[in-house]
Image 1 (cartoon, rainbow, N blue to C red):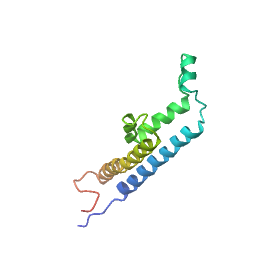
Image 2 (cartoon, rainbow, N blue to C red):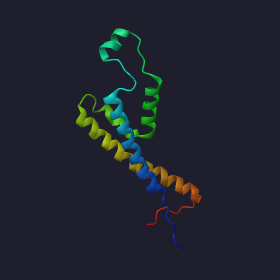
Image 3 (cartoon, helix red, strand yellow):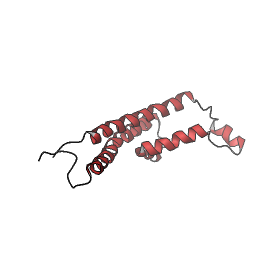
Image 4 (cartoon, rainbow, N blue to C red):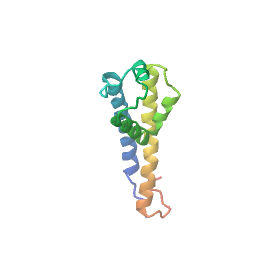
Amino acid sequence: MALTTSKLPLRLAVLGIIVGLGLMATWWYVDKYDPFHLPTWQQAQSMGNFSAPRPLRFLQDVTFALCPGSLLHVFTMDSGNVMTYLTWIVAALLNGPLYYLIGWVIAMLMKGGRGTSPVAG
């Protein structure tokens, strides 16, 4: 009996890397062109009660949900642009294995979980 291989894990791994790089490009655009017209730190401080616009909060939530590796930015805050871009690349590359595992689990569930691997080994 031949094992059939599922292409789902590999496709999701590639999709994960593309999603990570796409979010990196989106945040670069937000940082460079400020589409939300955010005040500077000094302006926000003088405003007293400032909260981020809803689209920005939504983008932050989507980023953390679709690219969990972006939490690495906590360790590289205020380190400069080069470190930020390196962290984004690592986060995007971490998405590959994470999405692969999700695809592998989905493929196992679709096969009925009969104990056979969806990847030929």
